[in-house]
Image (cartoon, rainbow, N blue to C red):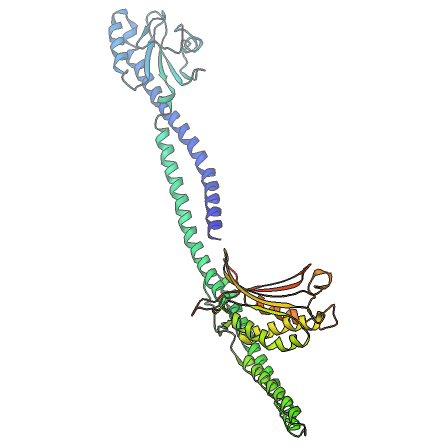
Length: 449
């Protein structure tokens, strides 16, 4: 925006100055020529008036020569006297060979005028009446340099004024652009904070009226989102809390069972259900701006070990490969656990018994930063039509929500989700950005200016 504003100002100022300065430069050229012509005309008239009486007698020729010599000098227009017998007193007019030309013949008729020869410059011709042997002509010759003397200096002054006005316009545009861009960037940073889950972020209304209006509406939107999320979390917590009553009844029913082993097994399931309900309540009440963090390697090992007994019952060979050190990713541990359970559960439910699968966790560095990859691979038939099912649909009679849970878990952490069918089977890969030790997880990308 700032650069565009500067370019627009420079272009507009240049066009306006061009429209003004081009006529001014032509005017200064014309003015310089008129001034030089006026001075040359005055010089020629003075010479004609001074030597007129001297030419009345032949004895005064020396006076005429002295008069012509006195008005000639370095950098002055050449002043010549062309007598009636075509003799030239003073500098010989180099522009005209021979000296007698049509303009001189016209001047001998008694007319004073200026003439522009094809070779350039300008001639001022004034007749001298009263000569003894006819009419003489005073000729003042102006070269191109003498005719337009001072034009270059005027043009340089005008160019300096134009450059100064352009620079002043650019300075004012830069200050205005900095004000607009600064306000826009601060507004974008507020939007970034809101996108990252900091619902306390508010924009300061500043800048032009349009940006102040956007800031006010953004603040209203943030307040409304905060209200809606608070109400949603409370509703979810209330619904989860209401499950405690049937769970408690189920526990009492389990305690009345006569089979001790069956009662113990059902009680363990009820306990696990209670923990799940408590997790739902805690998650519903957890503020969004809390920085989630989980060890991907540890969760992968723990969930693989959890599902290993069922895999052994189905005669499946399993392989878990994880780094020995921590792999921190910006994902809540419960969500990461749910994603792994969904992916491993899909393998157990939708591949033939005896199909081996593997869980692999790796860390790698790319130009975009450090990332961690979680890959669940099996040697089954792969995905129908080589693509993963969309949310709510499945090619195997399921709800189709398992892969969507994993997808949302990766994408909400600024990661990626990829499925692929190969001749060896199906592969599902979740990519997460690594969380620096003690650092904050990456926030979703917001608008930039």
